[in-house]
Image (tube, rainbow, N blue to C red; front, side):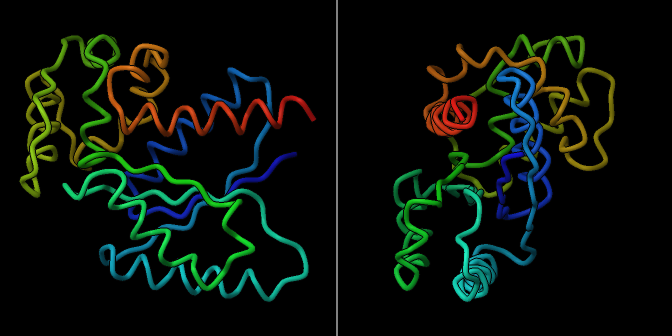
Length: 198
């Protein structure tokens, strides 16, 4: 069974990306064993823990399974955030081909709002996806408001509904509609096509 390691910034990323991995596993008919490593304490802490993880893995004889690093762009933009994360890899060149990235731009909550029809199926009403905004809590607030307007409370900020949203998404549509999500979906398609061909 293929294995994949997900190194996530926080639990919201873990739930959303984990649900997407499960969705692809079902759609492609490939059983996958994901391992989740979540960092707590922001991106500085995440960079440190990712470096420690790579150091530990580099001491083993065999290279690990593919690794997906998951972190919000936080208004730096997809490429700038990716380049910062790639900087951690400089000391570990053997891992360059194993690591890919899921970088919601600017925040994971935006990915929850990208498919209004999926949102309608889950919550009974559509949602509004504004243009890219960079205020720190803009999308957190917006996601909670959109869920609350459907008559449902989200004490975990919406992450408790990540699997429901992912399972209802029209992946073909959102791939072309939301660039940062589309980039990640193309990575998953390539990986699952490789696994399916084995």
